[in-house]
Length: 116
Image (cartoon, rainbow, N blue to C red; front, side, top):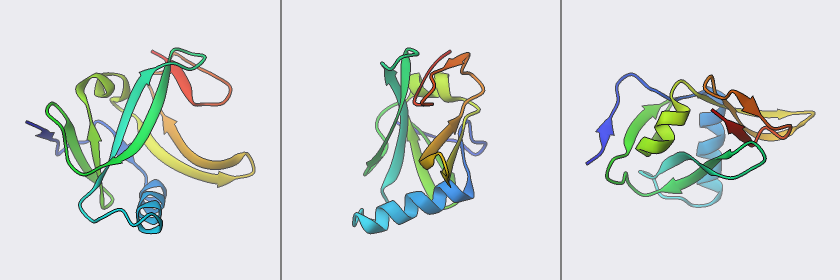
């Protein structure tokens, strides 16, 4: 059974939400799918962020809906991601999603892994 949160533990900026919707449209991902946000072991700092699309929530997921995007987050990942803001940049240093994670005590130079 999934939990739907009214007060989001993870936030997604409007810019990131627009990019998620663009990616869904470009890849013909059906309406109703959500963005699975998570962490897994690995990377130079111990944990890496994961993003992917999923048709529905899994048992134990928290479902967060913000800026027209549905986020699915498993319990273990939510522990590390609580308070995180998912943003998107297309600046001089490259283009991609950025995790602004207040729980990260150390991050690597590439910004793709962290420790908490």
